Image (cartoon, rainbow, N blue to C red; front, side, top):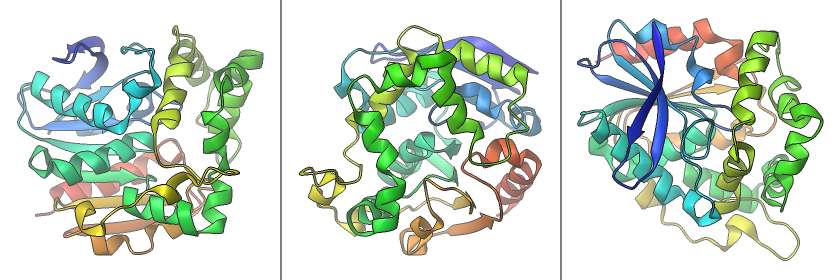
Length: 296
């Protein structure tokens, strides 16, 4: 059984809505959604882990029923990571197993890199390691082209285009590039309800506007202007990366060299799955995660 309409009141003043399944006394399994989703993306998977874990899926800052600060700067990665730190503490836990997709994965990577004591195990689904993503955005023409949508989303009033014609573009993001049988009328209604929350679409787009990682455009070099030390991006916790190889936005090239950043890592390509592999292959994703969690 999944219980929604719960709120974590963080020390920062941010309020995160979350859904949960399982006994709160058990180890915490945190599930983090990406754009343009909300906690509901994990609904099919949550009961599968509820016997052994306290499964918590929050609406991240700016999404659905969670707080939506007005300033773009409030969506910088450091604040999004801090949300997770404070959420784990609010839930009365010292650490969490983190399962994350897309933007949720971007924040989860940073959490595991900066605060490895808080992450027992890390499971990433189609979300690039930050150092490798910055490198690809700077050097790989194919990935630069595939990531141009990020620059479009960073534009003023992109949220207006996304909400036009009853969220037509947002729906297309979820259904055009892979198996869309999962996007039933019931699921569509749930997403529309989340997108209709005041400032929800604008706030979710602010994640893109606040991020330093984006492809070059015109005179703006994007990620190329950043200077990173690879040694600062090592992931010291056991990590599983699941990647749909038919993702047209985040190409499998982003996995090249990833093993150099993982002290204890495993990567699995899922043939034919798109960026929305959680929805397209829920049974397979569940199986792979369970096997990983059961391993020593």
